[in-house]
Amino acid sequence: MRLATKIEAILYLKGKPLSLTEIAQCADCEVDEVQEAIIELMSDYAYRDSALEVLEMSQGYSLQLRPIFDSLIDDLIPAELKKGTLRTLAAIALKNPIVQTDLIELRGSSAYQHVQELVGLGFIRKRRHENGRSYWLEITDKFHQYFEIDQLSLPIP
Image 1 (cartoon, one colour):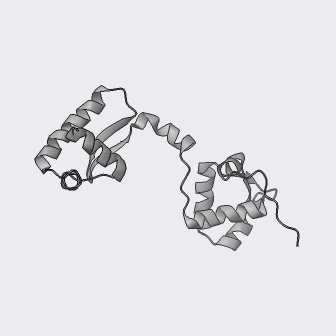
Image 2 (cartoon, one colour; image 1 turned 120 degrees about the vertical axis):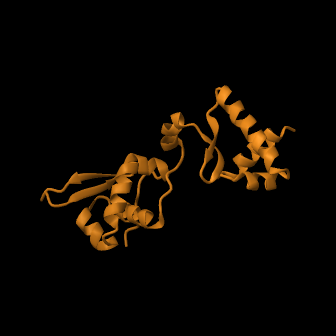
Image 3 (cartoon, rainbow, N blue to C red; image 1 turned 180 degrees about the vertical axis):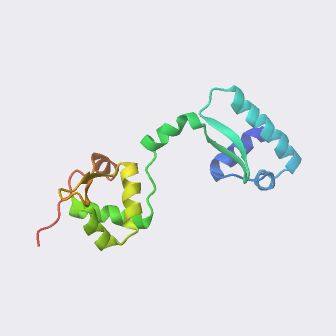
């Protein structure tokens, strides 16, 4: 097996930038051998029509998707939500729709940032409240698709 191929597998499996020393340890070889193999691997990716590339970054070398495919990430990879943002989304989903001022009372001022993030991700939408001072927040179809929920129904107490 070529060392370049082994390094390709290491970079893929680690999924994060690795220094030449770290790669050498994983591949059980010398740093100068890794350096030559990395150049070979980078050259291989540069000349083939591949969605991937090997990049040198400040933290080390990384195997990653070419920037031209960034738009696919939004469509195919689930968004990672922090716990606070997820809780804000849950509150919106349970009260759907909810006035933003009520949400802030419920979740605190950090919810303003959560709302901005959730609107950006397409999980909720904002529309002006009739009084013009706040917004209605409601979940979107993307929320239903992402969480595979047809309809939220709460048990009647």
